[in-house]
Amino acid sequence: MTVVFIIVIIAIGILWIFPKFMKQRIYKKMTDALSHKEYDRLDEILDSFWCTFSYKPYNREFMRLTSYTMQGDRKKIEEQYATMFQKLRMSKKQKLPLAKHAFYFYLETSQFEKAHEMLSVCKDDPNTNEYHVMQIMYDILADKKSNHIQEIKKSLDQLKSQKDAYTKEANRVRIGVYEYLLGLQYHYLHNVKTSQSYLKAALKKCRHTPYEPLIQEMLQS
Image (cartoon, rainbow, N blue to C red; front, side, top):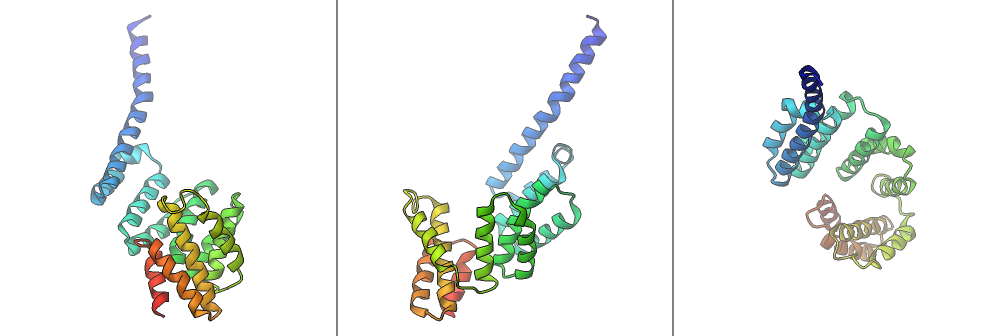
């Protein structure tokens, strides 16, 4: 085995291993910055040469979107969605999760026309149950329909029967969202007493979520 051949093998090994090593290192830096809420540092990492080299634009910009979401910066979130949908070339597989995130953001901020656009993108989602839930939420929040009471009550009862219904934060918030949706529908039906009961219960479970100000607004109306 010649020296030249050995050098070539080593060089190929380095070229194969080094990008993987850098990708893992950059990922750790990004997650560390995000977990410590060092958002400016995260932006610097995302714009760095090695991050650009290691990650595709979609992955970098989705991480940036996550940062803006954690900061609760509505203006930056809106701009980031616009940038990603208008400037990035995305596959169907990439576009779907982004559209789902955008749907809930637009719904929670009462931008119903944009929410409907995102719902249209998600209509081909193979997860038909998730799309059905999205359609229900749009019906209630945007179209102010009140024909989903029994279905939501059934889902709420099923969720409440789970062992971790109140100990797991995600489930507790889901219970609150169901109660909020019920409160809205009873409000549309002018059943003030039942509406207020559900909304007050929902508020306790949706503290520090995007739904909190929406519920508070309904309770004061």
